Each structure stands twice: as C-alpha cells, then as structure tokens.
Image 1 (tube, one colour):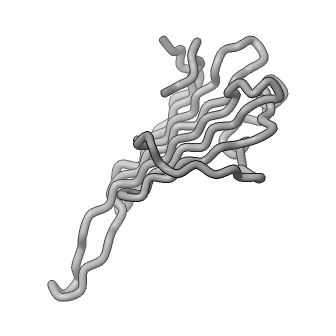
Image 2 (cartoon, rainbow, N blue to C red):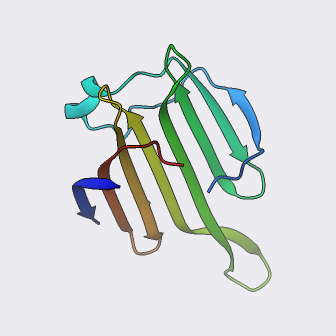
Length: 134
C-alpha cells in the first residue's frame, strides 16, 4: 500500500545478473531535498546489469548491511530504419524506480515513466510505502 505525495505529468531487472561493487552511486539524484535528512545513507552498493536488454538494479546497504536504497532502470527499444537498409535501436519506453529507506522504516518511492521519447511524455510519481519495492 502506498500513499501519493506528489503526482506530476509532463519515465525489470532479471535476477542472476553479474554483481559488482560500485564505490560511487548518485543515490540522492531524485531524492527531494526537503526529505534528504530523513533518508538512511548507504555505505556500500551492489549493481546488477541485465545483458539481454538495457536494464539494471542498484541496491545500497547501511552500516548494518540492511537495504536502504534501491533503484531499477529499464529501457525498451525497437529497430528503426531511415532507408530500409541501415537499422538502429531507438528507445520507445523507459522506467525508473528509485526508493530510499527513511529513519521511520518507511520507504520513499520515486517512479518515472517515459512513454514516448519522440513526444516528450514523462510521468513521475512520489509515494510512501511500508516495504521496499521489489
């Protein structure tokens, strides 16, 4: 169950992917500055990449090794051609889900969906959740 805080109109990660330690992650990128002091800061991260599609998952852990940050990114592409001879990949849909554990154990969840890259249609949503998004 989640409660909407902000709703604004105007963006699947597979398990079993390689995992590597990543020293720097922009974990505060979508975190509203007014809520930054309430977020538990991660001390280390693990990043998983999907090799068959443009997707990844980043998880941050606190000093007790409990999850306190989670970000999923996914981009769907399609083949396009300008002259029916040369084909290229074009983005057609993207989704980002970023969440931060707050000091009161709830999770602040930011979701952004880009449904049409050629139309600049971006939908974002900020909500509170009792559990970490999966």
